[in-house]
Length: 221
Length: 246
Image (cartoon, rainbow over all chains, first blue to last red; front, top):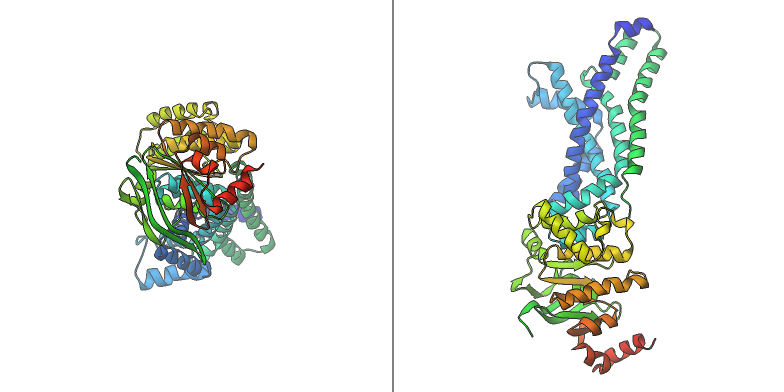
């Protein structure tokens, strides 16, 4: 056991997991917000595009997106995000695909948040002469985010665990290292436990944080 | 009548099969206070909301200060900035403080500086009597206080005309007067106002004209004294008979 801990860089692998999670979280929040705005906009073409986005990416397996990023985007279409380093390319594509995939869930969480905002808030914003963009930014989205904190938390926790799918394209994050260790060493059960505990350490505080935030930031009406 | 500010011409609107506005013709002059009354479902709230296009309409035209209402987008937003609106359910921005509610419009729409908007905002809050609450959130205020803040929020935009959509209907009885007092004050200062209300006392005290609506039509228009003491139409007599006997 101590043997395994000294021979393999488990902390480094979890470091990469955290790296993937942080950048994908930022990417999916930004992209998901954009798609959510499209889905509630008054322009029907944008609404349709937003709906398509969610339906396509929410219903595609993440593994498939990951494999497509390397086999399809990199090898066939030649879109290499890091030509100097094959591992770097995979890591960047993993972040892109994690962002795209979870943006669909962020969008739906936010849309449920928008539904917690009474219609009168948007009417008051429009009646005072705010444009659609301004009433989104200053009135609707701030309240929608507060109403959506709990489902956004679930989405981000799922994102942390879904970083493990990046193992299929050779990104050396925690699950990838776990597969390597199990291949080379005995005592698979202990290895499982180590990695399971690692993920609990990452996600449990996240859950507690979001629960307390959803309580503290709730909009009082 | 003074120079016309809001002109509705042959306005028609349906909600599905229901013909809520039938050939509405109404002209509101600068500085005039028009009170719209009528039984529930008569279309008076819809009329009020149509003037700043919170409700669309199918035919006819509405002009404000000579400009026709634009369809959508930035032009409509610009026109709405000149039309204040006070809602039945206050609709203060729940995540912003009282002062931020009052300064949002001037800063974002009128591009006023934050300090100037805050100074003006505090003056307006002072005027409606809620300056001590400036840093609280809407949910911490009483209904009457919230509605007075909503009036201050509209005034901060320096509107040409203000629409009141049943401003006292959601209030406890003891809070109605504090809101009406502010509105009477505004009327005295020459603000152009369209007020949908059930407060007959306000109509008598502050209105230049009473418009009586029933079934989507304007049935009768008159100055308040004449309307309340000698209504001409059967529909108005019936309505007044029901509400003034208690």
